[in-house]
Image (cartoon, rainbow, N blue to C red; front, side, top):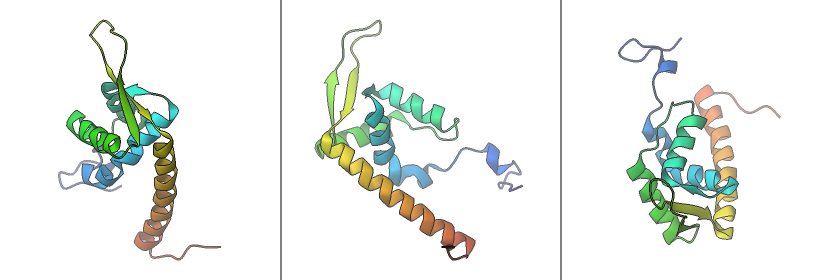
Length: 125
């Protein structure tokens, strides 16, 4: 069992946002590849899928959304008015789907490499 500095089981502590930060765009694109979503729903899905080990804060999400929209990887639109007012939805574009697939391939390669580097073992063929 790994313990953090405070003595708590490391498995009980949230993952460091520094480990996730470089992958926010890919995470957002992945969620949007399934369906259009509004901001709060994206944050909620991240918490749900991570079993509450990671919280995507709204300022981080909206910064990523502006960046992705500026790159033409997503588009935004206003949904119909609901009980709480109109929601801004995000949808992935064709270029966004291609970027997501590239990022996913790169992530898988990086994960294999990091696994080898931290374990000190060569990959078995």
